[in-house]
Image 1 (cartoon, rainbow, N blue to C red):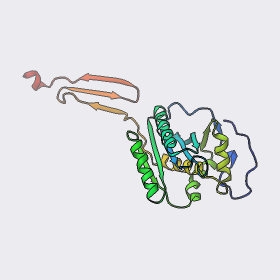
Image 2 (cartoon, one colour):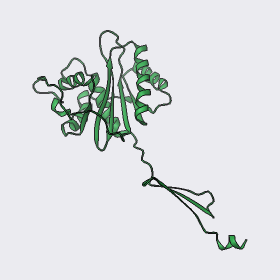
Image 3 (spheres, helix red, strand yellow):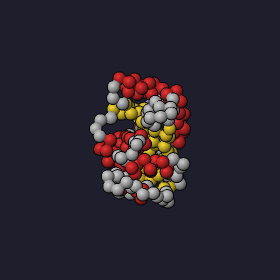
Image 4 (tube, helix red, strand yellow):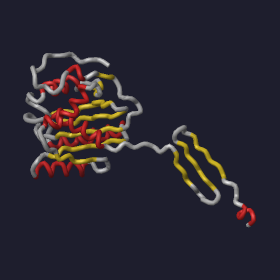
Length: 231
């Protein structure tokens, strides 16, 4: 793991610190559970940014795997969200996409549109409540404990810069998206193959057993019952 270049941050009040973000080159190949959380904005040239943060949970470590961040028109933003979903699911079968719902009727309509747009994916709406600092605190705690990794990417520097001035910075879109992805990574279902699967074609004669633990398929035929032999 490496460390990104450091620059002095604000004195006091910062929830995140640069030394809490070790950088790794890759996510473990067997990682499956992933959450992409979108904090949407509709500002093409000024104002808030849209941010989509992808967090992957594996072996009790959280990997911040990718950040999509920018100011786009509504049309471009929606296209980017859909393209990102396609790429994410190709990498992580157990993908959950979460869209933040802003207060008011406009936020509700925007979230509902995203759900329709992402039909075919596991997509949820997050109706956020409470202060931003409270929502970010659980992620900050795990960062401080050494349980969070950053996957190396061009987005790393701006992402860390925003987190390390939060809550005093001009923008917090990446903070909100990261905190949301972390929270939903804990809620997301984790699917595990059963150790033994049994299928009976004819319960009186046959049994088929699949042992997923060692990858071997074992089959045997039950002996005919005396009544069957007699018949």
